[in-house]
Length: 322
Image 1 (cartoon, one colour):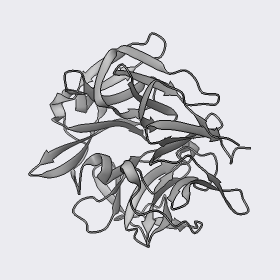
Image 2: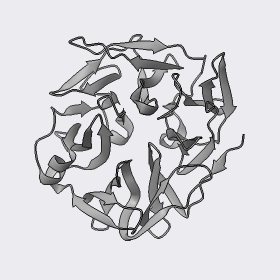
Image 3: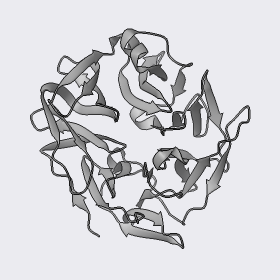
Image 4: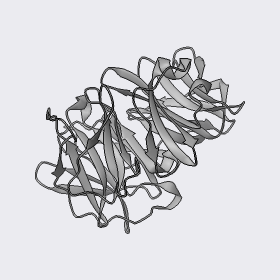
């Protein structure tokens, strides 16, 4: 198996559940459906964004993107493949400095963040409420830093949105799930020193939360138990992966692969000897060298694993398929 780089004249800045998006060399937005062999991206020539590119992307009947347009305003766009058309939806009503679309169990959401008294606050709105200025779904969570570094999130087709990181003034890393009325804390034992990834198995059969404990990879699986109070998890047996402390250029030491077909997590680990794609073959854990660079996101679709490393997507045949 060999890694293949997704060829595009530009920088990939977002990857989520079978889609990637970014900014072309001309400053316009492109979107691509990830598969093997790679498909050509769809470029939206009328959509110019700032140098940060696309901040977030979510799948649906049409792709949903967030970013800052040429006028500097934060926008939500719906993008169609067939006619290369985009529909803008300004997010000025939520007064946010960062935003990302998401879709969990039957809900189309927008995560947004703003500064209040020097502290970043994370809010979640239904999509239409974010556009119209309606109320958020729950209270805001306080972050220990900017949302692009302080928090990770993930959601499946069946489970609620999960956010993880340095949240709500806690001294340690915590994870929270968005219920019908408010956030519910997720109990993690042993408690990780950092949480770096949230991913789900295909079809929403499992939700995993990954992070670091004493320099090693740790993964917890969310349990569907109908208890009040904190949601329960169980620790997933993982191989002995010694992770780098702080990956360069903003990467994450452990990234879980979203939408894997199996019942065990697949991950990309940033280690001293280089990045490794790790999976369990039913008998033992296996590892394959991955391209160098800061690991940012990963998903499985179209029979391949796709990893955003730096500002490029690299793909390889899914070792767990078949």
